[in-house]
Amino acid sequence: MSDIYESAANSLGLFSSPCLTKVELRLTCKGISDRDALSKPDPCIVLNMQSHGQWMEVDRTEVIRSCVNPTYSKVFTLDFYFEEVQRLRFELYDINSSHNGLKEADFLGSVECTLAQIISQRKLSKALLRPGGTVGKAIITITAEELTGNDDYVELSFSARKLDDKDFFSKSDPFLEIYRLNDDATLQLVYRTETVMNNLNPVWKTFKVSLNSLCSGDHERKLQCTVWDWDSNGKHDYIGEFEATFKEMRGAIDGYLLFVLYHLTIDFTASNGDPRNSCSLHYIHPYRPNEYLKALVAVGEICQDYDSDKMFPAFGFGARIPPDYKVSHDFAVNFNEENPECAGIQGVVEAYQACLPKLQLYGPTNIAPIIQKVAHTASQEVHTKEAMQYFILLILTDGVITDMADTREAIVQASHLPMSVIIVGIGNADFSDMQMLDGDDGILRSPKGEPVLRDIVQFVPFRNFKHASPAALAKSVLAEVPNQVVDYYNSKGIKPKVPSEYQSSRPFGP
Image (cartoon, rainbow, N blue to C red; front, top):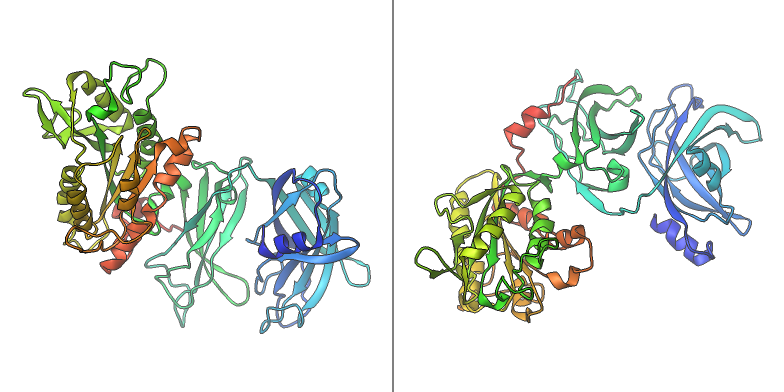
């Protein structure tokens, strides 16, 4: 819902009963007459809603220059009240090329209807009623879509390289349109970027869009991205297009397409309880996963979509391990120190369940060694000049760490590397020290007083999400990762890079 609409609705007391649902309205218009013999109209549609006998402006579309058949990317989001008559008026204006306001604009006509009429028909087309009450030739079509309940928004950034030059005396003026493939095989415009003038390597502005608008909440839905060369007469030249799903695009964290490498670490200290006892946090119930497994699967299912090869190095700490049963704080869960990787999250789960009977849970809870182990691998990426590998360490632990000084030092040093640390607290222990490592309440410093270069730690207590969906836990755990990735590469002056593999499969083709 737009700020204009929300504030106006509240101030006028527009709605007195709970909203039944939210709907999105999309607009197209066909056959707008040329009022100026020398140029085409620059149409804009203003949405008004009636309250207490008065019309008030709710929102308006963008202005599309030199166009008689505009398709607007602007989406109107409205609350629908089944028991109320919500009268709408769509006013069409030809905007003065030098002024985007309505004061100097020409009023071309309007269409009136109720929100219920649009929703019942899903797609409503009506002829424009011109000034004076005569029916015009222009047709406005309004399409309604009920929101599915997923109101998450995503930020997308697009750029292109080496686009075709469609102009004779200058370079192309490219803009990008994103279309969603609907279930009936039609294409629905989702977003149109601004035009970047005279540029064959454009970087368009980052924008936000709801998952409902982008893909109807379906991450596997096909999206078509088309690039055009803008022309002032409205006859834009086609440059090329590519198709991708949102799931495929999701690997682009704020524009950085990376090979993200996840390392998983599990706490096997004695404070978890004997795994043979049903009270243990490591107890393997035949039908119900324990908290370690719940957290591992919830976060891992999201993480594995970003991991380049779906192979996860999985480690444990705080246990005596075979064959000599010495305490280790960075042992491979599959007991293969030469190759600690497991195939997918399912492989990690199987290795975890297989190793439990062979371990003697012990202690202490030291996590500095595993941070240093992953940091050593990440340090090999420091000298590269491209954004290609970023490392994320996921630590699942049940208690207060016992090597706080070493852990603070390890995190400060790791903050200079392409690396983030995610800690999920399992059980009901006091996790106040973990909150300090998170750094949200202040700058974390090493025992010597050296501050972290950037915040790389995210801590989440699993108990806060016991009754929430796995997606809610994963969202909270991964919330800070995109900014951490961008902060690192910005600090190194490294610009976003798309790996050649993704480029070759997503060309702009005519």
